Image (cartoon, rainbow, N blue to C red; front, side, top):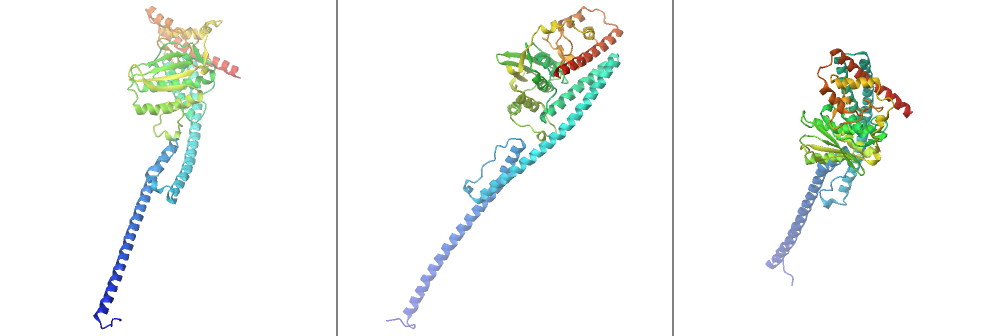
Length: 443
């Protein structure tokens, strides 16, 4: 029997159905709302992750890539900040952006470096031309004048020019050029003295010992330049009145030139940076050197890698400073016959004897190339002042030291002036004559 609408039971059933249906709908709504909220929270988390990944790309990954490319060491970039994004199109897009950025930055850096090298090379070549003109002008002064004051000033200018030449050579090395013309084999002691003559504080360098080896022709100028840079670094970072000691260590496979200074030493991080530069494995770019460039270690590292010697500054000197070592392997060395200079048929020329007399008088102002040879322990055979390669030649220092002790009356002023002029002209004439002979041999 069906309940009648007028029956209260009917309405009770209707109300029960409505209540049950409403409960079901309300439950479904709540479940749907909960699912929506969870979905919203998941989307928000994903957005936060992608925002964080984008910030990681901008603030960490791209700058690391730029620094590596700028420093010539593209060691890669840090991984993604959130591993959950691995394999997603979003992260794949980031990787594509990094790759494009790497290609563009590498091309831009290379073009900037090539442009800088071309510009700097052009400037240094023009500087070398001006320096050659300066040298010619000094030669003319030395031939015309006999006044010791004029000659002393000319020698100072000549020494300053040699330092400018060294700086131009250093910059040329960083641009990939040859540091200088090829010379004949030279005794290692003369090579070291050549480096001494190219620094400002040459009179503070003291050389002890004389190895019985020479440097092969193709490595003479690079080794001279490397030693000059190491000596300049040692002198500039030491007390102004202190000495820079140079000595030699012979081994079965080569010879080391040791340089001790009395500076404050290097901090561990500075030693690590220097070690990287001196290996030559780290590319040095002109565009990285900044507004106050430091050429010393970068130049030495480039030369060491190019010509096959090794340099280190990881030891401490006995004075608490830095001990630099330049190791020349046997492949870069030749044996030097110590008796060969005495076998010259006619001894020194008249100009060279006049130069020696001027030095014995103790009145002439020595040029940088010769003054550097007054280091202790360098008691060498009597030879010309300059070799064909332009390096200072070895001389017997014992006689030069003994003569002033025997003198009781100073030389008259006229004799001093003549000796200074003869000394300077003898140096220049000997250099010009032997340079022309060397060039004829090279031809």
